[in-house]
Structure formats: C-alpha cells, structure tokens
Amino acid sequence: MPQQPVSAKSMSFFRNMPESVIKDDIGDVQPFLDIKHVPDEVMEYARVRLGETPDKRTELLEDLREMIYQRGDVEPIRMDDEYLLRFLRARNFKMEATYRLLQNYQTFREENPCWWDLCPLDFYPIADADIVSVLPYREQNGRRIIIIKIGKWDPSTTSVDDLFKTVIATLEVGILEPRAQILGGIAIFDMEGLTMKHAYHMTPSVVHKVIQVTVTSLPYKIAAIHIVNESWIFEKIFTMFKPFLTKRYSDILFFHGSDRKSLHQHIEPKYLPEVYGGIRPQYGCADWFRSLTSDKNIVQEMTSIGYKTLEEEDEE
Image (cartoon, rainbow, N blue to C red; front, side):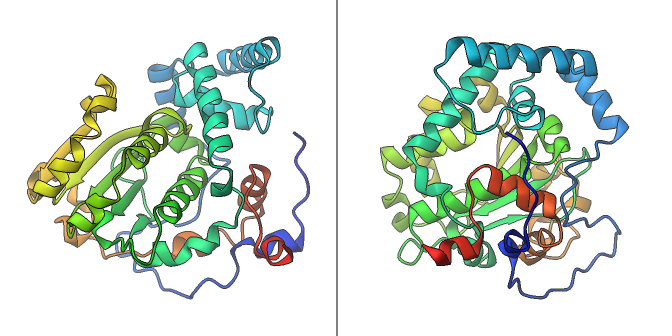
C-alpha cells in the first residue's frame, strides 16, 4: 500500500510521555529505533546465516507476491517490500514457511481485532509498572532484550487481554528494526512473585494465545528465551506449554532459577540490569515510548498496520 504523509495529528500518537533522564555510563544506550540503517556486519550475518543477498531478496519478494495472488486465501495488510520482508526474514527466506506465517498472522488478527484497533499508549501504565520493558541498548550480539515480569502483573487491575495488547504492541514496534528481523530478539521471563492467582488465569485459551504470540503467528524472530526466578508454581504452569513447543523452541529455551552465572553464560553482565547480576541501572519504559514521539516513520508504520492515534480514539 502507498505510504501516506504523516499529519500533525498522527504525530500526537506518542504524546504526554513523562520526562525521564537516561543514565548512560557505558555510552551505548539507544532508546530510539533504527528502522532504516543496517550495519555491514548484520548484513553479512544475513548473507551467511539466512542466505540473504540483494538479488535473492528481490527474487523472493516477487515470488511471495505471486504466491499470494495465485493462492488468494490471504490478504496481507500491506504488499510493499518492507512489510513482506519482515515475514521472509522471520522464516529464514523459506517460502512455504513464510506463507504460513502470513496466514497465521492474518488469522490471529481476525480472531483478536481489538488487540490492534487501539492506541498503544493506552497501555503505557502496564509498561510503567515494570511488567513489560525493553532495554534501551543491545547485548553483545546486537540483539535487543525484552523483559516480562509476570509476578508484577496484578490480574485484578490488568486484564489478560490488556497484557497481550501491551506485549504485541511492543513486539510490533520492535519488528520495525531490520536488525531485529535479521538477528532476532531475546526474551527474559522473570517469574519472581508468581502466585496461584496468576496460575488461575493460565487457561487453555490463554496458553494457546501465548503460543501464537511467541511461536506461530508474529513475524518476530526469537533468538533465545531465558526463564529466571522460576518456582514450583511455574513448573505446574509450564506443563501446559510443553506439548506445543517445537524442537527449535526447546533448543532456545533456558532455565536459570536464581543462578545468575547461568544467565551470564548467555548474556554478558555488561548488558544486564543489576537485579540480574549485571552492571546496568533499572531502565523503565518511559524513554522507549518517548523516543518514538520525534520519529514520524515510526508513527507512520504503526498506523499503517491498524493502530490508532489518541485523537482517533477520542473521536469515537
């Protein structure tokens, strides 16, 4: 679909963010998104690990469009190169797997339309409560880290749906970075504070949706999933997920408990908050959101896939 100019109205998409000060003793904090530039070393990784070259990229994008037109059973939100490329990269340029991901994504959206028909800032308080956060720097391999602290989620004040909406909006933003499309991201699930109250909400339907978000239906590549501070309650919950995990996801799933040295074998302490045995301060999500206010390209990308501005919600 053609890209439309971004209006002043759309630029209010991320207004009213609280002011905050970033402490950056190391000098690599970058809360903004880099959705245009791809470093040479990342492109070399794409060539070696994904087989991605300019010629192959052009060829497979055309092949994917042709497949979409010929089969006619999926209508992507957009058909431009940048949009379709994130699906190809998520499935390592394997055509049938890419097409299934497109189908799964569209079906997932159709099953949960209200999860996109909103302004992501409606859920800023969830991020502000430190339930979901993205570290404003990249770890040693150039990947961003998302941290989800399930124990800080209060089901009596925040619905399961709102939690899903927040995570999905955060991932949709992250997917905009070509580096994330190529390298993937890292997830840390912190289970400290997990109680039976949380377990009660882990219904088969919720488990199915978690698998859709993490495995089958979003064009987001996960390089590793780290579980920390797990307890017997988590073990009970995890039995519901095991049947749905493919070998690939079993291979990238790591359990650390309270053993920080185990976590450090995968993520160097230099790139972790102090609470995980690292040297970084605890960064909130304020700067992650505020950094988007000045980037009209981010606003344009998010509205192009269905998200709203605050004014559009107010008009309804």
